[in-house]
Image: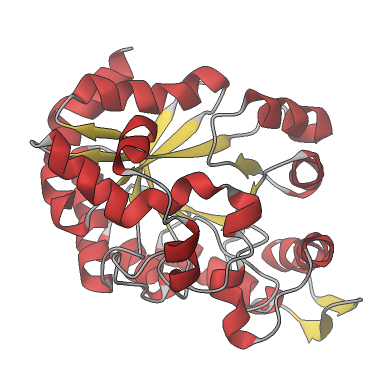
Amino acid sequence: MVAKFGYTLMGEQAGPTQLVDDAVRAERAGFDFAVCSDHYYPWLDAQGHSPYAWAVLGAAAYATESIGLMSFVTCPIRRYHPVVVAQKAATVALLSQGRFTLGLGAGENLNEHVVGAWPHVVQRHEMLAEALEIIRPLLAGETVHHSGEYFEVPEARLWDRPEDGVPVGLAVSGPDSCQLAGEYADAMIATEPDAELIAAFDEAGGDGRPRYGQVAICYGPDEARCRRIAYEQFRWFGLGWPVNAELPHPRSFELASNSVTEEQVGRAISCGPDIGAHVAAVRTFVDAGFTHVAVVQIGAESQAAFLDAAEKELLPVLRTG
């Protein structure tokens, strides 16, 4: 399968109007798809934003014509009930005329505790599995009656949905989530170029299905300035998902990343004007076996320059190599 390349609508670093405008520009630049983060808070105060992702997705679906769209990712276990997630996904899929994929995951305390207590990781995985048992049949047009350990659905069906349903991607981080993705998902999602995750997903039944990855970069004319922006806004990234899933507030991420240095961030994230370095960062995912790779350009004010560079340099090089 020829790799496809995507653009990230990073809601934590830009407001809703810019995100929709950036989606339109990303389509014009030639990106195959765009993924949209779904948060209540930013990771760090320095990022400064967090609009409602589903309003952004709906507007982007209507404002674009061909680019694929994906929630990256939505947690269907606390802040949203699974029935509501299915309804939102079906509506965006109709607005986009079949260009939408519903990306799901077990979520983070940062975004989900705003409606109540954050469950233990074992419960979260159980809740996610039960949510999928509700969402999948709804998207397939079935009437759902569900009385489970975590969710009650006396009776629900979707009145507006695509006849062919909506593809579902599932975020994975280890054997249990790979097993769940292999059983329930049309695609897997990961943020690390880990070939073992792909192998586990394939073994669980996902062989031949799309694998979505995401890589953060900071393109710009001044490498030192790019490194500083990446440090100010993305130094939380290296904490790892076992930590990221549990911290409750941006100030928690500030404290947890206090010991991270700008030099460390610069080694982990490609920064500056060198397109070759950014191409290499994206290709770590392609080489690991990912079929779709979404790029995060760090820094809201640099999106226009990045999209210009992506159209003229980054995407042509990626597609020839």
